[in-house]
Image 1 (cartoon, rainbow, N blue to C red):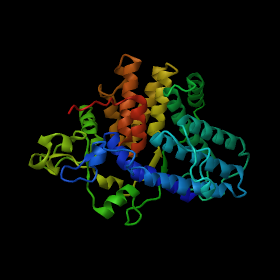
Image 2 (image 1 turned 90 degrees about the vertical axis):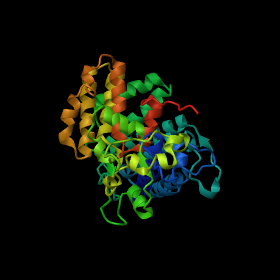
Image 3 (image 1 turned 180 degrees about the horizontal axis):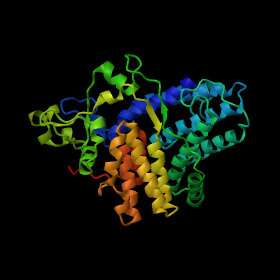
Image 4 (image 1 turned 120 degrees about the vertical axis):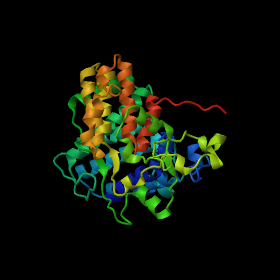
Length: 398
């Protein structure tokens, strides 16, 4: 079980953290370096190997380990934990690829070219797997080593419910069984049987060989390729958000926060050569990630999802405002900045209670959720940008 957890967490917290950081418009390519030009300019096609290692980690690593566990005579609680892990892993696969091997997957040499099922089929399948497994837990307890939850079945259930909430909202906004899934999200929020704190893979330390995997890759390669993208810097600055200092450094030329326009490195001549250097733009503060856990599903994200459900489906602006403020406070706390959250929330720029329409309130919920994913869960940020269309993306003309 620890191996399966690690394989999925590593895919999320290392490779996906990098490319989704570009796609969600948090990262840009450092002006005097070139490693990630393809991500910065979206020069990706079916021949790119962007997702290859994640695919191997999840299928040949995590899912193979889970199949190994399930082939043994395991109890109901052990089975349940494995099924929840499969739901999480398949959610990442669908969010990355839409279609993926599911019904014919993991048959080895008996079936080397499995069918690729669509996302609807996969989501419905894993939701049913977890539902069936949960019904068969009985009084059993998890017997395996479990770095994520220490074998606590209640915590696994809280995580599963939050994953359901994520997936149900994906289904609703894809136009799939909207009425049914709307009732399901309302019921989940009403029951409020979620987790406390953050769901995270927290096994890293400030020692070489034990670093957070994303930071460890940078440390080993000494590849300081990332600078902050203009969208995240500009939004931080426009809302006077103190969290800008957590993951972004002022530039070295004028000691100011400056973001690089996505794709500008080779598209805009005035940002090339002698005219634009590393010193002009804000670097990413890599060191905050040295021993940070891999954040799988934060309390902040959960509260933002609850706020959305309260506003969109329950038309309860008061409950939505409470969840929204709890979400922002939780993110500040995770960055060890809890004392700054109160003053930030009183600002008219981010005070949800000063907004008149539900559309304006929902846009603020989505924007602040996007901010909360920075240096936390870039894959979920990219998925949510595509689901919500917030922040709205624009096209740079040639």
